Length: 241
Image 1 (cartoon, rainbow, N blue to C red):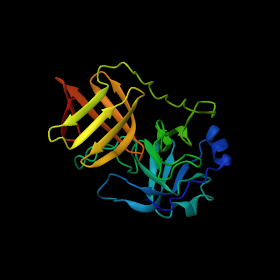
Image 2 (image 1 turned 60 degrees about the horizontal axis):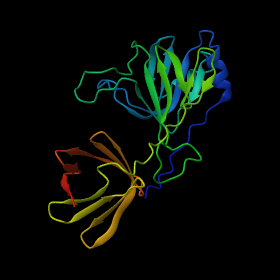
Image 3 (image 1 turned 45 degrees about the vertical axis):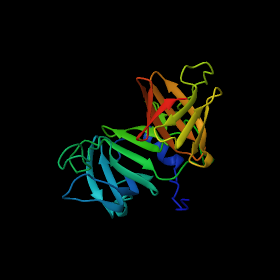
Image 4 (image 1 turned 90 degrees about the vertical axis):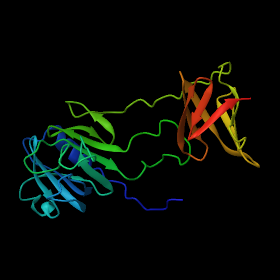
């Protein structure tokens, strides 16, 4: 069980009012864990990113000390991960970076769930994308869209698909060694036995075409594919019984 006390960012309504009418003031994303994507500058556990218009003008610890002198709009990013909005970790020198002189396209991700989000299995848990900046403009604030007038709009939660009791894939599926027995129930739930452990895993499932998605009651997601009468899931091959 994860008991890490992740901090929740402190969002200042004054900062949001300033963002609605910045009057050319620089914007400082302060106190987050900064992943620059630039091997020369490196990364920081706690640092600041300074934006001047559409361009990144400074990155690193200590920029907050000039906030009053330079009349910055300061956004507290403690408890977040700050990184390029278009990030490519597959090869060095590819993708955008948080480098002074580059366009300010930045994603700020919370490390903690929002207050009130229940633990455990739950479809459409919401996003950890806290702030999104493109071209120096804040497009997302507190996970909500920020329109041109500076008004935040909540994203409608996604509804889970309804169960289809008469779906042809409903029934018992067994792996090649008779070790795993996964029953897709008509009410949209599954019950998976493993060896001599009945109901080792239980949860909800949704079928879309030949794909099946699982949300276990323990909280994790998994998927499988139906191909030529066989269910392929987590490295196993299941056939109907």
